[in-house]
Picture 1: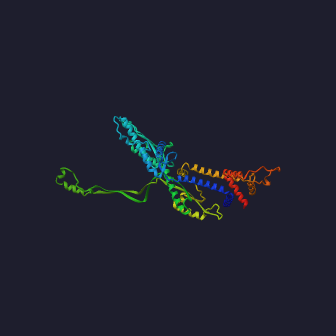
Picture 2: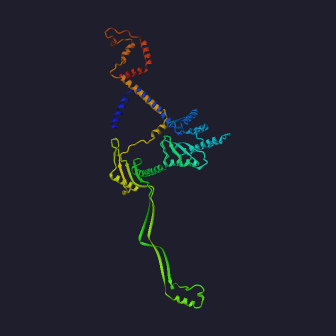
Picture 3: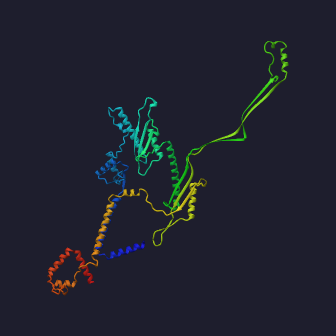
Length: 529
């Protein structure tokens, strides 16, 4: 490649050395003009511009451009007519002018609608205004979210019923216009549904429907919401591991020279376990009851007949004799034992990692040859890749029993432009820059055409009228005709003009064609040398 460049450079140097001085001056002048034109274009492109407003409606954008043109403020429109930029020094002035015109007009009407009291307003009109105000306030709140550029809210507020079983639940629908390249997560969609439900009396989050401007339904039911939450949790884990492993590799191979992708297999089933354990070797006394039963004389206490006969003389002696007779007593003990039992109730986690797979690519090293050709790629050694793999295994918590795997390879990286670079470059340059570049190229092409045209006119194949030798001209001036100017047929040459006439003719020719005159004089000087 360098040899080819040197050959081209030598050819250009040879052509430049052979070119006449007039052609060199013309080429340098044209190049200077082209540089000036491109410099003016690039100086206009380098004027710093700031975003005045973004995410505008076409109607608001047209009104803003009209006001800026009327105020003679330099501006540019990009982003399909949704972004307006002005010079950094004109931002404050432009915003003040647009504020006077109430621009941009979002069209949302909030509770300020009740600041203007109209006499004779019906109850129905009051209810409609309240609904409009509530919708407008919700639109402003939702539009304040980071990924949302604009929102529309529609509420259905039924009349209150006399009986509870005849009541109709309110409902709402939300349409969001997202910032280009952004998306709403399921958590954010759920937050919007709860926000709207909390602002309307009797409205449940399940009664709020959220969709985007493309017609895609963003709100889901409870089951779909649970699945979406599980998917978000999996993506969050993968992104977290990818970012951590990438930073770890870039500390060794350099920033932008490592790429890591993580795939996680997770189980979101919730488990509950109840375990009862009995130990037959260990007995536990639960309760104990002791009772005593007696019968006959052993029972003790007064015995005999009751009543008046017992009070007569001789009755006490008989009773005492009877008490000394035989009897029985019984002691009863009742004990209850149970086996030792252990009850364990375990609730498993809602998310569990089943398997993790990691794929990593790292750039190699490059060696520049002595001849200055393209760098030569050298992949990293197996030993170095093994060390990097061991580091990744420790960082991710690799579990071979779980089936986790890590694969790392060394491949050459290519520079890929990030998404949106073309848009940013286009937004920072004025619209007339391509035309200025084309004009400069046209000027250079015209100069090259003139140069080649003059070179072509001096080719050997064409008949070029050469000036007469100096001696011949002198003889012509003196009025003497040399033999070389005789006719071809040997006849005498026609009479020559006088010296005054010849002198006058030479001056007229020199004034009419000064370039040709200078060329003749230059050739005379070369002949004299």
